[in-house]
Image 1 (cartoon, rainbow, N blue to C red):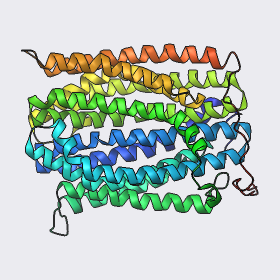
Image 2: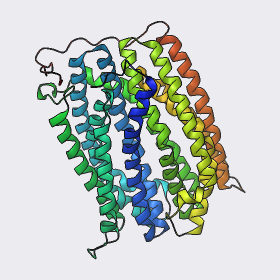
Image 3: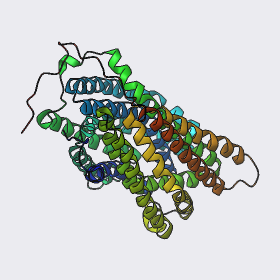
Image 4: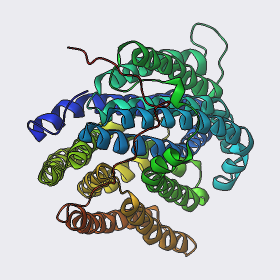
Length: 468
């Protein structure tokens, strides 16, 4: 366990951000690898895999519910020096991760095809997306276990093990993708099914590795079978913090689905170009997102310890660093967009859409960095409802005008990106205002999460001697 209530905040952020970024980049690279090798199968395959990948935002919503709730409550417990509560939260979150994983598998088996039919009209795109989803769902189901274990470690200030596991998993995925998709060395190409299977195998091995680390080396929080019996009160605590954060990902899913819906009549090339551009811009935003994610546990531990000035300082430092990073990345996207997109498609029309998307959407990256910073602070404070409100505002201010414009004569794809930039800027302004109000309410008055009642003796974590 690393005490984040002392020492330089900037040093803590800079120490935690690189491993967090490496782990997130690994996840994004897995998706880009799938698109890269699938691009040889044509625009319909690329559009199908990209659109199917958007369904991952719904699963990520559930992951965020667990991950954010786990990080916030364990960080608060660490700040209060309440190790028993930290262990109780972790073990109950682990049980929820198993439940959500099983629900994901069931939903994937029954809803993959109806989902693809709702956002695509091209039959080849529908078939490709459905096939990819069915083979990719095991990876999403296993991600719940990885999310909870990695979140528990991050709440205690430990981020390197999860990063190493993610990097090894993506290396494995990169190795498997051409073998399973194109049949390299085997002569048995699985096409889009191979893309989903490669990811599922890589995530399965990564999950086993992270669990092995947790069982053998982690000491502050650990698996305790006595705490696995479902406790609705603890589930409620986790979900009260995590549910609004999960709702934010639902809003992102709706936002993305609205874009696919608006683009559906412009053909597979438009949807494929948007899918490629979305993943590339998500990748280049990772450094700023990693900075803000590192700030969350710092704010959480200090809020739990009552160090309110350090909570404010954490936001200021994280926002400044994220802004500097986003300015640099915006310049890169404006000056070298072709370099960032190289190799993802041989179709000129698809690449033209992706290039236009990247140049226009990159203009709102500073605003997106501020949104990331505010969201991380709300998570650290244990109140994520304002994040959901600001995300809902973005969806409403974008989706309705975009859908209406798409039905009018002379509709152009640029209108979609103009509306997206305006909606993102509005969300950034609203997020800053909501965070300022939250700071005034909870930090000035000394408001803080009520300390949980001690765990019953039979459920308390067994004492473990701290390592020297």
